[in-house]
Each structure stands twice: as structure tokens, then as C-alpha cells.
Image 1 (spheres, each protein chain N blue to C red):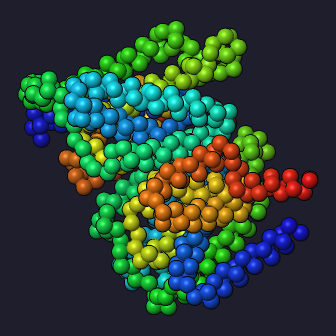
Image 2: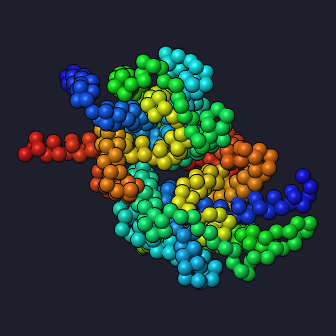
Image 3: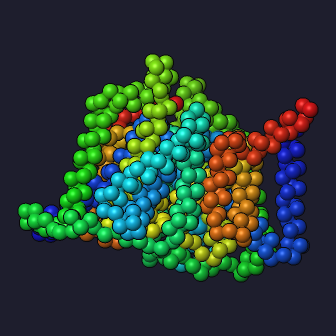
Length: 292
Length: 309
């Protein structure tokens, strides 16, 4: 493999990784605060892709308006789900919450079928990012370079939001002791709702950003949710930078797996996850959970 | 006394089912065969959920492994059923033991997700190992022994196998081992304090659950004359989990009832509307919001209220 080919593959891997990171970070954020594994996260991703299709193709809006619409749309859906249903389940067992999110998957999959049918749609690259960029010895599509920039930007934004602001301190306190936080006068239900909305909006934005790379069709939710699980398991559940590392490892393994073991590339992420878990059962940056 | 009542009830149920072919409806026999298979599948999962307290989101993997193993041994290697069926159970059991070894190192959510990810690894292997499994075309044309080449006889074979499987699971769940699992579910820390090797016990439960899921899978493969990669996909794991929950995890018979009700409801719904997922979602919402202990729990509450009145 020559250097330019190698670098091109690295970039394609990174672009995939950053796209996946945007989605997985939302899953990880929701788990970190609400302690709910959101199976509907993949469905939110699919809705994000459908929304950008409708907004850009049917209404003719610019690409980035579509991305924002996907984020806003999913935040709104998340608000409804949290406010009317999920909120009743915080005191129940984990299993019930898990199953609740699966019920959301089933309901939303049929809603998607009713609205968008079962056709495949494609979303074009935004006009401003249709060209190519020469980077060293390689030439890359601008859109992929954009993804490689957008991922770290979102990671840093999330980090500042959660680790460096007063609101972030409240969110982190909510993960530690919900009742104590409420006793100190913080409106915990609103904190939960906002976190769920941000996490879900990230899935929608991730889906919108993925739309130009892939075919938008039913079933895209089922694979992406498992890939997100792999990423957050590798990185450590609820850990922002762990998820970032997990996404990087995932993207590169998928990209290079396609070259070195072409028939088995889909299996490689699981092998990666297995290897990580053998060495660190709680993920690269995760910490052992407290025993129940 | 409860035991005697239960075993009488079990014998009555088996006898009634055994009389079913007399009704002469091919449709009823086929439906009953499928329901029986899913009953066993759901019951095997409840060893993990209801007894060990480990919610596996990847149980379809062992169903698929058992099914594929039986299919491959019967068809590719022309083994007789008397060897292929036990061998496929062993394969499913060993696979569950291997995967379970890693899963039981974690608990709760981490356990669920790891079990799911391993199941997807199994799915990926079934998908890509085309030479052996047939890939996404599925493994079709399973050679079933001539003796079972008839819906009625296959129904009796399934009924017998499932009855033996359920009886074995009943003994396992009510043995000292089953009670130990219950102690682990209720309080893992305290179970550890009294000297129970909780990880080893959960590991054993994982292997047992996988073995019986393998039996269900083998029966399913022979019934359908084919195994498909969808049988290992995580949505299949979710479906059986819903069966278990709908019936109720806190009773032995709950999963049997849940599996039967959900499967029949699916067949019934599909006759009227293509939107089965939405119906299933609404059922699940009802279970989560108002029926946390399932249909069996509901029945207990209703009969409790009636006896008080």
C-alpha cells in the first residue's frame, strides 16, 4: 500500500469515525445522566436522515438548514417522549426503561413507514462541499474533510458544556445523586429533559450528516444502534472522550478491514470490541461500575 | 401440594395438545408447533432474566447456533437426527459457555450490551461465512429424517422435545442451583457473602439458557426446513425478551404464556394489518407502564382481589 492510498484510507476511516462519534456521543450522554440505554437512538438517527431528505429535497432548503432541522426535530420528539412517558419510568427497573425505549423503536419504525414509505432516498452533498481538497499527497472529498472537522468541534463543545459550565456541573451532580440535587433547589426533571433532548438531537444531526454518505432507507436504524453500542462499550459507557476514542478505533477498523479482510469487514468491529474487553472489561476509559 | 397440582396441570396441558391433531386442521398443527418452539425459547431466556437476574439482549444467538448446527450436521454431513440433535445442543451450550464467560464478568446494563454485541458477532459470522451457513440467502433445504417428514408427526416430535425441555428446566429452576440464582438476583452482594461464587453460578445459568435456546433453534430449523440470519439478529432477541416480559418474569410459567399469547397475537394481527410492529410497541408500552409483572402477575392480582371480595 502506497502512502497516498494509506492516507486516503485513514481519512475515510476518520470521516466515518467522526460521523459515528456524533451519534454515539448522544447515546453516551443520555446513559451518563439518565442511566437509560436508549435503544431508540438508532431510530432517532434514521429520523434525522429522513428529515434532512424532506427539508432539502421536498422543500428545497439548504443542506445546513436541513441539519439544524434534523437536530431540532429530534429534540422536539425527545421532549414529547420524555415529558409524557419516559419520566414515569425513572424510578422503575432498568429493564423497564430498556424495554420502553424498544417500544419507541417499534412505534417510530411504523410511523416512519407511514410518512416516508419503504423507498430508498438519497441526499446530495451540500453544494459548498462538493469539491475536492488536496491534502499532502492525497485528494479528498471536501465533505469528508468537513466531517473530520465537525466531529472534534462537537466533542469540544460537549466537553465545555458538561465539564466547564455551571449547567454542566449540575448535570454531573445529577448523575451522582438526584435526590440531593433536588434538595438543593435544582429542578432535576428539567435537567433530565434537556439532557435527553441534547442527546437525541445529536442522533438527529448525526443522521443528517450521514445522509449524503449512505442510502436513506428503513432498517438503517438497526445496524447503527449496534455500532453505537460497540463504540461506547469500547470507549467506556458515559465517557465523552472514551466515546471519541471508540469511534476512532471503530472507523479505522471498518475502513482497513475492508482492505485487509474484505469479506469479514462487518465482523471486525466485534473482534475489536472483544479484544478491548479482554484487556479492559469497562472500556478504554471507563471505570468499573459499583456493585449492585 | 403445589408441585402435585402443577404436575397434574402440566400433564393435562400436554394431553390436550396431544389430542390437537384429531381436530384435523393442518393450520392448527403448524401454529401449535411454532408456538411450542417459541415457548421453549422464551422459557430458556427466563433462566437468565427471572432467575439469575441477567437481562440478555442477545439470546437469539444461541437459538440460531443450535438451529444452524443441527441444519449443517443433518444436511451437509448427513448425520442421523439422533446424533445431530444432541450435538447441536452441545454446540449451542459450548458457544453460550464461551460467550457467557466474558458476559458474566459484567453486570446489569453492561452485561446486556455485551450479550447483544456478541450476538451480533454471531449474526455477522452467519452472514459472512457463506460457504457453511449460506450467508444472507439462509441455509435452506434442511434434510429432515423421513420419520418426521409429516406435519402431525413433527408436531408430536416437537411436543415431546419441548415437554422434556420444559420439565428439565423446571427441575433446574427449582433445584438448589435455581434457588441460588434467585438469591443472586435478589442481592448479589449478600449471595457472595454467604459463600456463593456468584460469577460461576451466573455463568452456569448462561450456558443452561443457551443450550435450551439451541434446542428451540434446532426444532425451528427443522420445522422451517431452513435457518436464516434474521434468526440471529438483535430484533429477534428483543422479541423473545418481550415474550418473557409479557408473560411475567417472576413465575416459571409466565414466559410460556407470554410466548403463546404474543405469537398468536402476531399471527392474528398480520391478517388485518401490516403494522404489527406498532401493535407490538403498544403492547410493550402497556407492559412497561401498567403490567410490570406481566400477565401472570395480573392474573394473580385479579384472583387475589376476587378471593378477598
